[in-house]
Length: 213
Image (cartoon, rainbow, N blue to C red; front, side, top):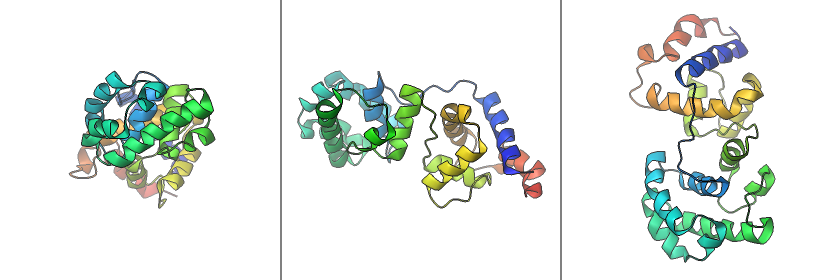
C-alpha cells in the first residue's frame, strides 16, 4: 500500500481516538502561548503548566514582562530547565514585540522566527494554534512516530515536516500534529512500546507494511 493510503489509514484511527485536541499548554492568548511553547523546549508540558500560571500572574503581556528583571523571570521558570537562556529570550522577545510589532504577536512565520528563542517549530505551533494558519509543527515525538510508521525516513524534523505535509491533507495539519502527540504519549512511547497492543503499529504491521511500495 502506498504511503498516502497508509497516511489516510493512520488519520482515520487518530480521528476516532482523538476527535478533540485541546492545546496541552496552559495559555491565555497568542503571547502567553508563545512564551509557553518557548518554555516547553526540553521540558514536559506538565512541568510547563505548573510554572506558567505563576509567571503569567506576574507578567501576561510584553509590557509587564519587560518590567521584570531577567533574573526574576529566570527564578520563576528554573524548573523548566535552560532557565538563563529562556529567561533572556522571553525578556528580549517581549521587548522586540513592543519595539517592532506594537506589542502584538505577529501572524507571520518570518516575523515570529525573527524573535529571540523562536525557531520554526515554535513559530509553527503559534501560527497553527493561535491563528489557525495551516502548519505542521514537528517535534522529536512526531519525528519518531513518522519513522516508526514508515511514512518518512527523514534525518531531521524539517525533512519530516516536509514529508508529512506531502502525505496528509493541509486541512488536517493543525489538528493532526496534536493527535500524533497525544497518540504517541498514550499508545506509542519511545520506551516500553508494546507493538501488538498499539492501535496503529499492530495494524500497520499486519496489513500495510509488508505491502509498502
